[in-house]
Length: 629
Image (cartoon, rainbow, N blue to C red; front, side, top):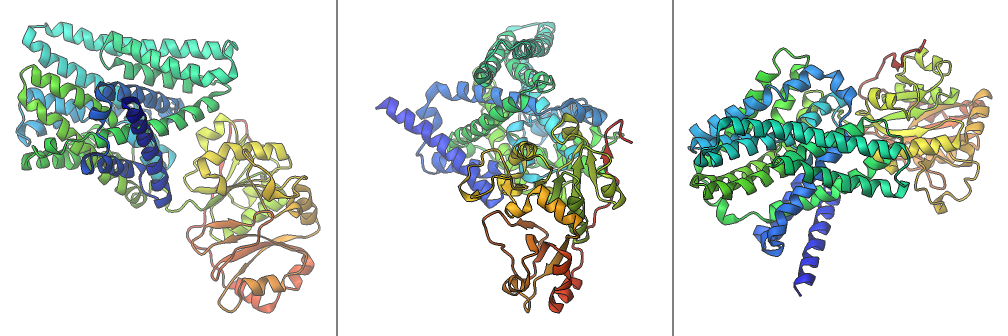
């Protein structure tokens, strides 16, 4: 019965976590907020699941192993080129921002919270931890531009292990103070933890990279071997110094992520899926384990302390640390505000509080409730405000309605020009400098190079891109490009030209390809042949007097209505085998023959003249890799 109960509880936690992630996606709100609410509902509110009762001593080991894997996954996403682009600014977020955060947080805990100095210094060390468990989901929700996102990403992933190590050292100092341990020994412990953890992470990463390159690990074994290696690195780091395992897994992820492995994308995809499950599980565990009686111990001074940490300590530390850096004032202000605390801070507080109480510091009992209230406060405040603040400061796209066209064919350039004039942001990507000539002459943004290369990953900012069309003359390459961007843009927003075998598209399973546009008549060769016969893209705006049925009744067989520009600026493509969906106020863009253009009804032509570009019209000469002419 006990085993069955434990199994049911674990299934409940996993189901609640993924269910919360799905609900957050459907509602368009930060997942962390829904996860916290779900955990509080099944835990303190109803008592259905109380982790420390259901799992006992397994709670903390489970959380620690989950955090180790999450930090590794975060390290995989750290790219050296992002660090090089903003090296000075990123470095300031570690030194001096981290010690400034610690100092100011400790002062606030002592003078505002009324807590003794030993406990205040431990509290100040814990609150510097802002980890990827909360930063990454918020960044996905906010749609930040790459440069702005890199600041928070680097800070969160590096601060997690460094902050945990700082908290360990401060904690050990005051505990060992009772046993007359020399200060030099504590300093050596800190140095050993940092150097040893980093060295272990680097060594395990290099062994993995070498084994993968040499073909010593079967393809189907690579993800599980990598997972076990992460856990081994974590355990080895902790054997050197408590919490040094977090630094080891972070360094391991960074080294492997920048090693240039040919199959690194497969490893990243596996780890990202796993990290989503682990983040969901851990947040449910933490929220469900909150004891209402402990929260009741907090008074007005505790509330004042939390407010000071959120509105004074963090902003002051970041703004002071980033003085004189290349960061724009908008970026400094944004980073100063966004600092959600997460799993590592809660886990560290949960471990240290009882041990400090046992060592003779009774006020340490406040650590756990203070840190958890800070977590809830920052998760809700920053979770609901990150996108609004980012848009207000101009660091995020207001709407991801832009289109990326892969393949600079003549009709593709004509499509980009029509959409640009309609007010839609368009970027055209191609490996041929010659084919991009018409794009450059039209003043349309472009990318010159291989769209699947690391160069594209480094230089393409997709903050404004919400749709992608793979429109080259190679069907297999189109499918490959779609498989690359499906995870980032969503399958419903990734399209490609139909193939020669596009007979019954609804019945074809498409695990890797994009959605086929229009039908067989939209194949590359057909579109190109018709372009040279004078076919062009034309737009028609639907009004209350000229609706979709009027438009469809009027068009000839030489008209291909391919997609719709919605009133809000979004795009709606006609999928092969499906009817065109358009409403009053939308604009239909069709590929038409010269004869069809001449035969358009007068009211349609007049409706078209009413169209005005909405929003910004984007101009620019784009980017070309070195060696481009």
